[in-house]
Amino acid sequence: MSVLIVIPARYASTRYPGKPLVDLAGATGQKKTLILRSWEAACAVSGVDRVVVATDDDRIRKASEGFGAEVVMTSERCANGTERVAEALDALGGAFDIVVNLQGDAPLTPAWFVEDLVAGLSADPVAEVATPVLRCDGATLNAFLEDRKAGRVGGTTAVFGRDRRALYFSKEVIPYTGKHFADGDPTPVFHHVGVYAYRPSALAAYRGWSAGPLEELEGLEQLRFLERERPVLCVEVEARAREFWELNNPEDVTRIEAMMARMGIA
Image (cartoon, rainbow, N blue to C red):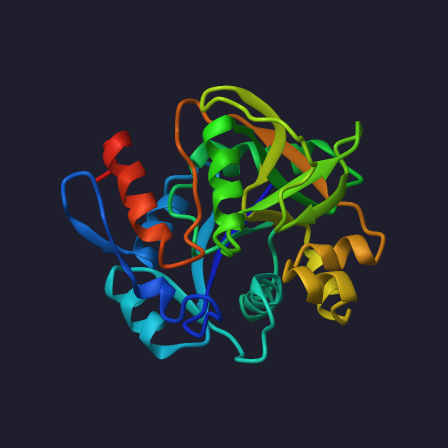
């Protein structure tokens, strides 16, 4: 199957304006912008035919072209990454079997997360949309809970049925556990990894739907599929001793830099 990775990136983030151009220092102290680190993560994925950055901002375009990325300019009217990916696919003329949305705030996404995601969607002839979920250890769950107590909205959690179809996604920590987990303990909470794989038919349908009340309340684009009763396949991925976190708030910069230092990521 032909695979396209699109990295949607916008400058006017509500919680963190200018986020794609924020510098992140790696283990050696070398600084790279968030969009560059996301591009490098995308280029590390095997079995991909093309990688593009999709943006509506000239500052992001110039920075991306500066490190050799292919850029597709999209409309300012795109409400979220999925709409931007759909518009980018149209601009490229379609012709891909699977389109991956690797959001531009997830520089720590390991290549195998995306590879397993594409394999999961390819193996399910009925599914049109898939997304990775990662079982939280106690340290990650406790970090989620600390963010909530501090009034910060960061990572997203997911619950799904035995058929691996998503039941719900939330910026709250679900399901409720009511107990404390040590840092290394496995928990029943799953971190939703902000990556999506779509068949082109799903993207075409998505663009024709308006946002529903749950999407507007949570600010989660994938809920548009669930509100339209279109199933989302959850593909469980393994950390393999890698730490994972997304850059949602300014406070996440130091957290991600500390993770890169521990993992030796330059």
